Length: 198
Image (cartoon, rainbow, N blue to C red; front, side, top):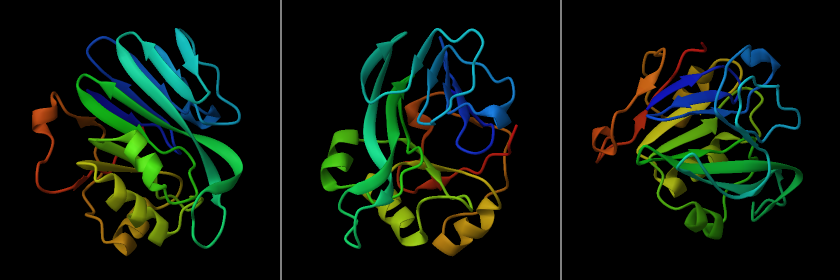
C-alpha cells in the first residue's frame, strides 16, 4: 500500500487492486480514486470514481470492508462525552490486510464504545493542523486510546509545531508512505509519519 497526502484531510491509498481517495476537495487538484470516502460537506467531483461513500454505515467495495462512524466537530461538554455541532464521519477500513482509520474533522475525544467499535488500528490519520477541531489534550487522548502502530498527521499549516508540542516524533517529511504488509509495521513503538503535500 502506498499512502500520499494531498493537503488538508485528503489522502490517496493505492493498494494491490484499487485506489481509495479520502476527502477530495478543490485544493486537492485532479487526484483520482476508484473508491471515494468523504466526510466533507462538499466533495470535489472525481473522475473515474466507481463508488462514493459519504454516509455512515458498513460497505464492502472491491473486496475492501469499510465502516463509517458518525462523530461531531465539537465537544458536548467539558467531560467530552459525546459531540454536538456539525457531523463528521470517521472511516475505518481494511486494505491489503492493513487496518486504517481516518478521523475526519472530529472535535471530541472518542467514547470507549467508539474506540471498541473501531477496533484495532494499524494506521491512524488525525488532524493536527492550525484549523483542527482538536486541542493537544484531546489529540493525545485519541492517539493513546486507539493505540495505532503508525500516526499520520494531516491538516493545514505547520504540523511540525503541533507535533513537537504533543511530544510526537518529528521525522523528515516523505513523498509517500509505503508498507507492503502488516508485518512491516512497527511492533513495540508508535511511528509518526509526516508526509509532504503532493
